[in-house]
Length: 165
Image (tube, rainbow, N blue to C red):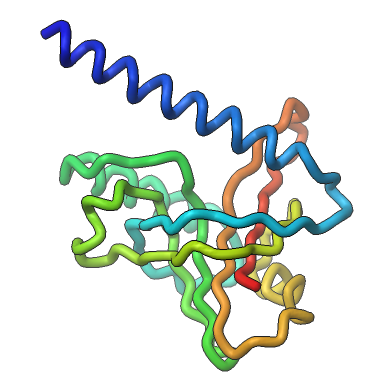
């Protein structure tokens, strides 16, 4: 019982340390600039998204995704939001929740490879406009990840968008 409790507390501490590092990284650049960061590979449990806005339906799908993952005893991690996989201007969108690597072989899990990402902050809910934010990145394949940011100003939500470079 003690070892289980220690393991649980260590997991909680790791999560809090990761969250603190993420907040510090996001706060390292202003709302009006872009900054490039290198990220490790991540795995996301997903449900397809067929809309171009992060509206009430997006949040319903996100809730369904969280519920489905918890019912299947899938260990959720920190990131959640939308993944846009673009190949030759064909866009596939997914509501996504980060999961541990041990779930990489599950159906509906997308791997995002490690690498450099150009990061920007936005309060934009329109996915087409977010896609256009990275129109200057000229490559036939790219991945855009949209995640919630952390702020002490709760007047409106805002997001960090990351695009492979």
